[in-house]
Length: 75
Image 1: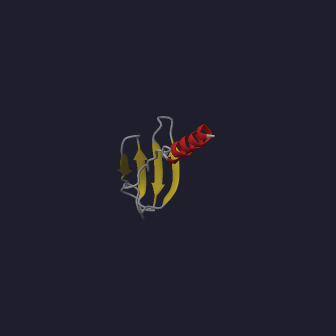
Image 2: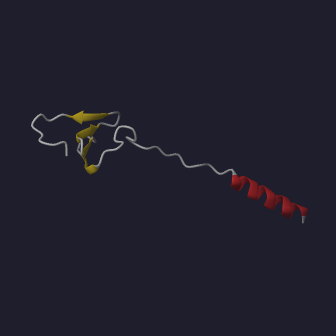
């Protein structure tokens, strides 16, 4: 009986210290406050993000705002 109680106690205590899942937020600070209208991935694995502040390109390392001089409004 003591072995059963000890086994149950060890089982419960090991479950309490389970690993928390790892996660990250991509572009949390770069895209903060922007409305995203669309996302497209091209053949070179670049992401093109259409926002209310213009077009952004994400190459896997950094976000780049693509300027367009003839744009009437940012959206």
